[in-house]
Image (cartoon, rainbow, N blue to C red; front, side, top):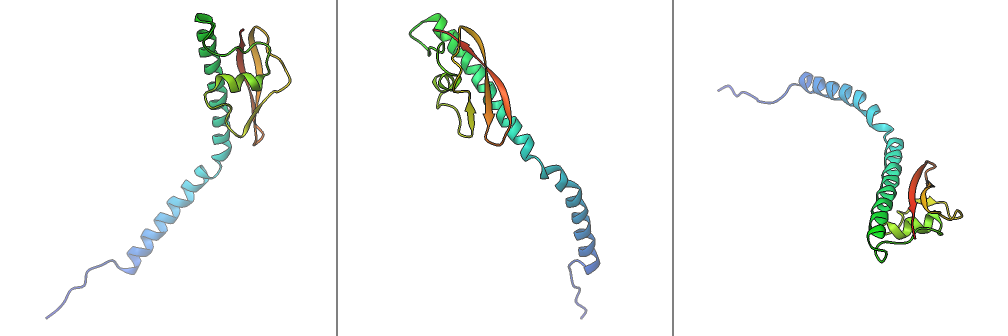
Length: 125
């Protein structure tokens, strides 16, 4: 009796490995340097959170003076800590010397990795 063997030949396996190698070689460079883009996106996310929290705080404080937090006369860091639930995320710092005035104030948000962007905090009593 003749038995038939089933399976892949060595050539078929080598061809599949070569094809996978070519696909990997073309795909890897696209994913290698995403860390810089991720850090920039995270910074923009924190800035957006500060801007949104400031607008919500301004609306709440304008509607009822007992709601929200007073942000006028304190530093950017103190204001951001007061309006953000949970405070400023670790790895980010804000200006700790400038006192906010009434209206829009520009605060520099600096990332530990070196990036920075401006956030707007509305000063209100």
